[in-house]
Length: 307
Image (cartoon, rainbow, N blue to C red; front, side):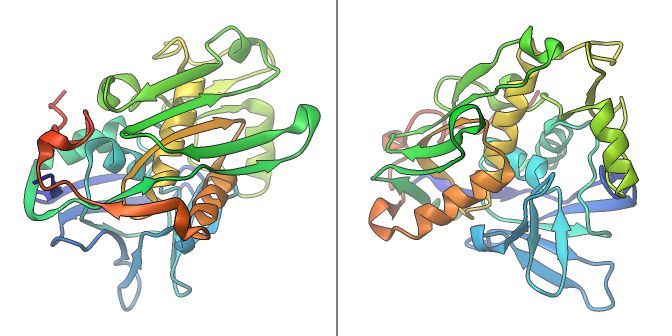
């Protein structure tokens, strides 16, 4: 049986929110089978649980925000990406503020946290959402076109193409494809950092955003070049970060996908629209499990090795 996964023990981290600049403590805890991933705002007078789902997403400006109407947590995508990359099904995430800490701007620190706690197999079949008919969302025309698509695929792969008119970005890889069956999430994707431009950062800070952002947790560029002295972690780090984000956004579905995701200039908003489009067409997907993990697609049955 391909089993559900949680943590063996709890693990903790402290950091600041990218946009809020607030200090925040994060505690990741094991959860029973079929719990899903649950954020818990433990700083409130009465702790509030927010269960991850596509319809729990209430804001997609600059980050993915989930809410249950009474409380919210934003910038969840990097932690969710790490959970997707390691195949974590059930997890309690206790958080002491409304924003997940940015840590180093990638998913690598979250991967380290999860792996340091150890991954436990549970005696319940892992449930996948298998896409059986293509679904697509599209916006704009001509130079402003952007789109995202899910297609049938017996496994999980993602391809993304970016289009930035900036010399530092244009000199790197613009398109990448990552297949969970052939690549290593921890090696190939998890270390890609979020990125931004100095002119945008100044504007965001004037609006109370990016208050915790800096060269230690983001790639920052002026009009011509990358300002980080250490340069890039991958020669295609920009587009790999978009894959990282997409994996986190899509994992907000609440279950792992069996599908091929492809996108051009997509972002948090379009990724969530794509999930809602999928859910609006029940004939386009089915829920499946694997009683024999040898019949599961490559890359989804194996536990990810430690660093």
